[in-house]
Image 1 (cartoon, helix red, strand yellow):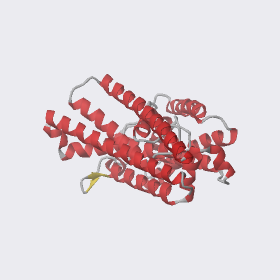
Image 2 (image 1 turned 90 degrees about the vertical axis):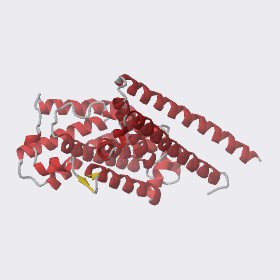
Image 3 (image 1 turned 90 degrees about the horizontal axis):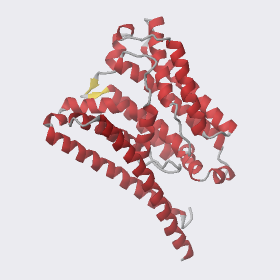
Length: 335
């Protein structure tokens, strides 16, 4: 690591930590303000509902973070979730005695197939991920609509044990939140402790330089899309377990919330920096905003306006910090 690179890494880490602390402070202030208006908002059940409501978004945000770090984006995750959720319901209808573990694995497998299709088109065809995943968003949703043909899977069609998993708790913490935490920790360790994980940051920072340094850029990008698809598949199974009733509209528009959580959480949309921890905090913040505005009886329009403002502010802040850091580094290199 060169003398210029070391300060850059330290500054990026400090800025990321500062962003994450800022999210926590904003969330605490929002919770406190809502609790003043409605003291029951901070009750045990309300906090469990908050964790339960954010669990699926956290799982999706973790996968999206790894994609965005490589300077890509996947807009099809909502459609993958919807397709897998409906497929899980249909699987239980066709095989009532199917073990739940096999249904989960089947859902993850279908997600991997969808993610691998995205990754293959992006890595092999060298087509921008924004264009590819915008197309597959409609393809996967179209397949879902054609398969469903107006049908709806009801809770009565699914095993009671599967549905209990969607709402049950362990030591007061929802199982869905436990699953999200396991996914979050595993992804965090991978990005920090494994070379292939650190390669993703190099690809996002300078794709050309990463290729020259021997990093298999195409394979890494393909793999990260496949992993993102697997997590979207897992989220689809969790969605079916939580809500019980599933149709072809499941997950519609969710991809925008996922991207918002990632960007608000401090993951640079330009790639090369950010963490899954920040993305998870972003998902929690967005969920908290939705719950707080509902309790405060504020028009849902303002929730969308606030989220949009947060996205614009996050992107603007990322750009401002990048410019300031570049100026500092140029000053040090000329010193």
